[in-house]
Image (tube, rainbow, N blue to C red):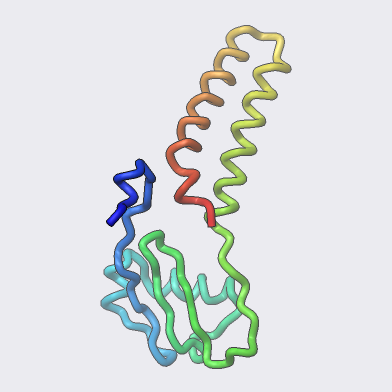
Length: 133
């Protein structure tokens, strides 16, 4: 069978998601294994506007992102936007640095902005496939 490696496609190394909430109860061992604690979990739930008692299942993926399934399927949950926002921020930084490079009258500042824009461009080339959803 054809694999991603055969065609030169980059894919992210993903681990199995850790179940951190089951039936409204926090599972401390998997939560700790995911590198997080109860304070982080409660902060994430607060961002989503959900109380833990309403969560049927909560999992943390290999990127540290919390995904939840709530008892009431009629409630609409906002989808997490962390990765697309990070990608957009990196692209904006790159564009800003290129613009600063063109606008400045100082040759040394222009070179610095240009150099840093190229570094961000390299970063973008390496992580874009991870940050697109």
